Structures are given as C-alpha cells and as structure tokens.
Length: 562
Image (cartoon, rainbow, N blue to C red; front, top):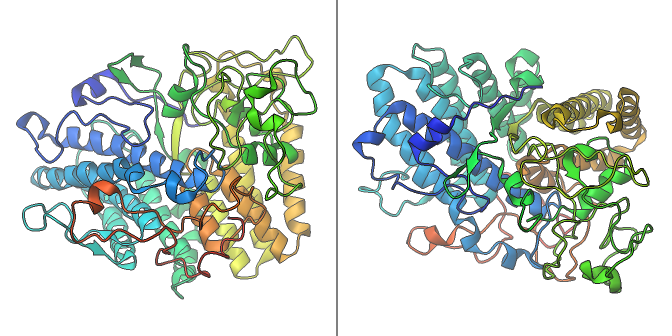
C-alpha cells in the first residue's frame, strides 16, 4: 500500500496555507494569487501551491458529484436549492484564480531555467482540471482565461473544444516529461518519478476518450489503443494518482489533515457530517468488506432498527415518523441495521445531539478509525471517536486509481459486447479496490486486526460479485457495474457522477425524500462570483443543461433514479 506523508510543516508555513473543513473555501487565500510578489516568484513555490490546490479542487468537485449520486449525504431537499450558484465559488476560484494563474506565472520561470519537467507536471494537472470543469459546468473559459488585461471578462469555450485542448495538454505534457529539467522540490504525488507522471497523463487521455464515447466514433478505438498495454497507464496501486495528507495541525494556524477527518473527529461537538444511508445499506446488503474501512460506527444500533436501543427516539426524527409515500418499500429509509447511522438523500431535518452516535468517516480514505466494533461482544465495544484517533487524518485524496481504470475498461468491453472481457476487468477492478482499501488498516495503530475481513471473506465477496456479474443479463451487468462505479469511487465522486450521467446506471438509487426534488443536475450552475461580474458568462436557467458528451435523453426521465 502506497501511503507516505510528505507534507512538511515548513512547506505549509512557507506558503502561508491553512487547510480547513469548509468545502467552498478550502484554503485561506492569504495572498492575492493575481498579485505575485517577489518572495513568491519562485518556481518551486508555485509548483507546491499548484499541487495542493489541485488536490483541494478535485476533492471539492468530487464531493459535489458524490452528494448528488448518494455516495455522500445531500442535505437539501431540491437539487437547485442545495447547489445554488454561490456553492461552487470556491472550486472555480481554485481553478482560475489559483492554479491557472499560478501556472501562467510559473511557466516563464521554468522556461528560463529549462525546467521542462515542471511544465510537464503543470500540463497534466491543468488537463485533469479542465476536464473536471467541463464535466461539471459544461462550457468554460480557456482561450481567454488568465489574461486579465486583454480579457477581463473571459468568454466560455465550448466544452468539446476544452476537452480537445486538455487532450493536447496531456500529449504535450508527456513530451515535456521526457525533456531535461531538475526535480520538483516537493512532488506530493509521485516523488519525482516521471514515468508515473506519464502514466497519469496517458490515463487522463483514457478518461477523456472514455467520457466522450457517446459523441465521438473514434473514442473507443483511441481508448483501446492506450489500454491494450498495461504499462501505458495506471494499472497497479503503486501507480495510483493520489494526494497524501498529514497528521500535523495547530488549532487556528494550520491543518494538514484530511478535511473529512477534521469534520468528524472533533472533541467538542462530535461528528460534523452524516454518511449516506444508501451507500451503507448497499454495502451491508452485499456484505462488502470495505464497509469497516469506509465507515466507523460510534454506536451499535440506529433508532428505529431491529436492534432498537433504549433512549429518546427523537435523536433520529424520521424514526418516529411514517415513511414518505414516494419512498418505495424496498428501498432503505431513515435507518440502516447494525448501527450504521446516517441520513437519507435530501433529508433536511435539523441537527439533534447525535454527534457521538452517528456513523462517521473511517480509516479509508481519511485516516480515521478502523471499525472493529462487534455487536453483542463486550470485548469489541463501540466507542465515540475523538481528535487524534485512528490514523490522525493522514489519509489520501484519490484522483485516479488502478481500480478506476479497470472499471473504465469493463465499461468499454460491455459497450463492445465482450462480456467475458468485461467480467475479467470488473473482477480486476474489484480486487484492486478491496486490496487498497483493506490495506489501510495499517494506518490505524489501534485497529484490532482480528475483526478485519479474512482473506477468505474477501475472496468470497469478490467471487460472489463476479459470479453475479457473470450470471446477469446485459441490463443486470450494467446495474452491477454502475453500483461499483459509485462504491469504489468513495472519497472522490467525479468518476461516479460522470458514470451515472453517461450510462443512467444504477437505476436502484435511493429516491429523494422530497417527491419533487427537481431535475437531476446534468451540469451545475456557474459560480455566482463569476456569473455575476462576467458579462460574457450567461447564468444557466436551470441544472438540466447537458455537458457536450452527454447525449442521453433530456431530463426529466433520465437518469431514471432521480
């Protein structure tokens, strides 16, 4: 398992950065990134900040996608109200005001010093960022961006053009990574292993072709041209494209821990977030061994469940209320068995005093606690979490993992009608995901490994899932694959959000509590801070506008499980 903490306190104090748990202002903007001072005009300072901002951007964008696809809990009852324009101001700023602006300042320094590998890394990061912007917003500025004098109000380029530019950047980045140049002072992703950076770039190309397969007849062939050789792309855990957090923090000054850890492992108030009932229930029903790593139960029973505990049921208000008429009886509602205490999609109830009883983030990916509680066993009690528990927040931000690439391969094989190859790729994706996630037990020094899933348990789970995929008809294969896109993408959400809009699967997602939540978000509103001041960016009338690669039926009606 590749876990290493390379973020030094010195680096962060040098940059003047502070990690917070806020999703829209993840890094305090202590310096105006468009006003570069002499002490900041240093190539490696630029690259350090760009890498950190990239991780924050991908995490925040992924969390948005995860909320609408039920991988994370979504608070608001309607999509529009929950993701109004101001919600994504911070993500937009990270891309345009931070990363792209800093890249524009860094490149002349790199050219002057002939540090072409620095430019190559920036090309890869910019390409991933651009594709993610298009995936979420549609048309976005590129050709006129970061030119404030000539284009103070940059126009949006067509999403297809931005994707084409991203593909060109990735190819250019691969070439630059082969050129001379000194090492990055701080490489938080690959520790100056440029062969791995090139694999990340080629995997980015695979992702671009993968997403555009519905609108580009050459996309599948281009994808297969890279995927035909496993040495080309991220095919093993050692190649995984991920950012590594640290345990260091000083209250009110700096915090290098995973933001999900910061939100849940709090001495004073307990957990700050809820986990998704849909995801916990799906994993419990499948006996998925990853659930002890994704989730940490602070309590052995959820109010309303069959193991109904003593006490005030109103700590979970819905447990004393009738099921909404629009929620099917075969779907999870309000509570999950075995102490998995979360919330349903769109539940906007107030916050009761459940901070030390609700289920929180586990050891993967946020480096919290491994869940070694056993119901009815006093030797394995359920204990509320507190600050410093588990791995102390030294987790990861997964951007592109080897399991993700195998899921992409499985989908392409299904598209081509090659069920046996799709089955093998699905099996490989599942194996790699489970191996990576269960390996995180070593992050928690207090974890009781006797409770961890055995190799036999893991083998049985993977075999059962693979057999189910084998036995299913075409519709069933797409459903199983769609669920796995969501489950294995836990901690990111971008791949699952794209998958759901591209394929419409899974169709068994938990419905919104509100019977009229509005159309599913096919693309997000433009951020308010941009649309309100840029005359060339016209705010969308709704969230039903489809990104260029999504040529599926219009909403409502697609995706089915709104």
